Length: 508
Image (cartoon, rainbow, N blue to C red; front, side):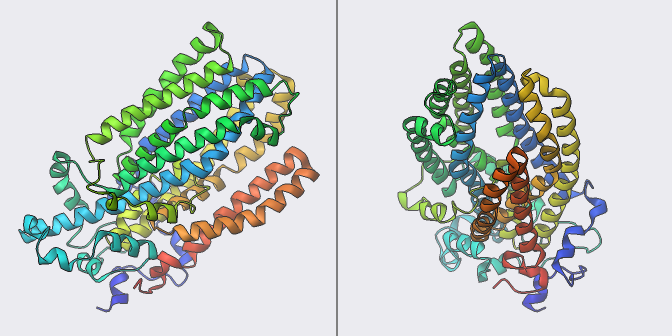
């Protein structure tokens, strides 16, 4: 069979237009097959962890709202600044860490399985076979470029998948059963994953930089956000922002470690740590805010303490699984991280739980599983986005009084409800496409497309905000998210980049 044929799964009709892959097996979107079970096993704990933070934030807001409209407005501005800083540091770090760890762990597992089958595991590490194999760094570089090396072809030359049910199975050399067979051995020894060590170092450095930036730039940043020097909001906003900034190292480290765990397809550990931290935050909030009478400062301190607790729990669990001390500085992958960190600058942490599945599939050369996983998650996200739209719309309509009793605040909430609710399906698809790109190591396209989307959206925000005010801003944000979704559909739907195999083209 030709190389082109090897990339085309047996029994699967090659679509004339790759765009049709988005509708493949749409009736089976929630089918509990092997892939569906894997997605749910990873996505459900990740979704619960992501839901825990907003719930804790809502309770935070409810407590702060009792202090008065000035305090809740001040905290809102401070949180907006923190979120913007997070766009530049947290989200890219989590996204690329998940993808890198998944790729490295898969490549190591594949080599170990092949060595065990050859009955020469110990000798392969030092003998000529190891010399003939392609180094991990080169293989990972090839994955990012969407190319295949000869060694990767030896790992898997052909896919054999029934076309009817698009079941995600791999070739003889790499299967999910192989993964399970080596799981006990992997658990007995700590893994050496260079990207995990690199992520923690990068996260720690970025956390310190973010702390310094927010602490010393608090007043100028608040002025830029419209909080003037004579505003009653300045003092509480500055206190909250400065104190929250002290938790940046813990936030960056904990989210970097969450990226590592998600790369291992372990989303339960981050869930447990997040729930413990958020419960601590909820318990401390009323004590610090009302009992100690610390006001917004108490809310910030409670949040910071909870973040450090989460990071300690995750670090303790990670040290039992991974050897975080690299053999040498050369093993660290700073250049690889820095090269790709600007790609997912506007990604959302919730988009990357499925990136591990796609990254593993690409590392295994199992393009059928990569395509099926991507389309399945996209279909799920659209349906869940519709449900979320109804839930958010009704929740904001009937629950606005929980956060504030101020008539002006409630009026603004009522105006924003249609936009917040209606954009949920669009947002869901856009965020999932981020994870699809990261799983395919398509970081360059993520960078370029985001720049183009920003160039098109920024003028719309300026024009519509002046002409339409609050409503105009929401219209502009809807345009922004719509363009992000279009960029994702275009890449995969046209069969370009790492998805060109959808047109039957070779990745070599």
